[in-house]
Amino acid sequence: MSRSVSYKIYQEVFARWPQQALRPDHQLQDVLGKAVAERYKNYQPSMEAEELSKAKALQFLLQDRYSDRFELKGRMLEPKSQPTYFEDLVREIDEAPNRSWLERLGKRLSGMIRFQ
Image (cartoon, rainbow, N blue to C red; front, top):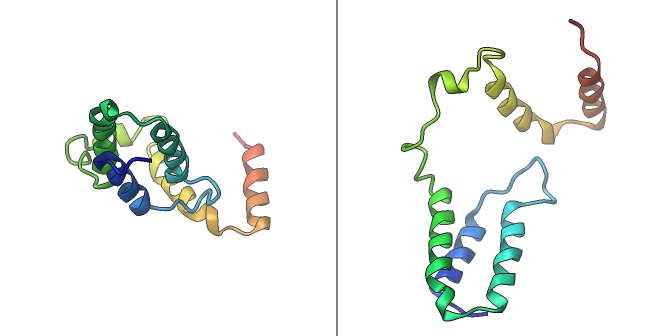
């Protein structure tokens, strides 16, 4: 594998990418790392410009540069059908990795039975 600038940026980004607790066996940086390694097996110097732009895009996502420019707020985060949907979703994702087996079973069963 070549030690090009883009490859170094990829490695730095994958090292700093946050781990997700919800599915610890399937990390985004691992999947992307394999794809990048596969592309760099047949590396050509002519690929550098395209790879550099892709690596920079990942780096900008890691640095959260787009959050101010494309901020989600207001009505977009409060749908009329269920205004607390996104708050509930974030809470569920945060709680899910710490649930016991019995709590997971209870959540699954409560999702199957709905009273209207």
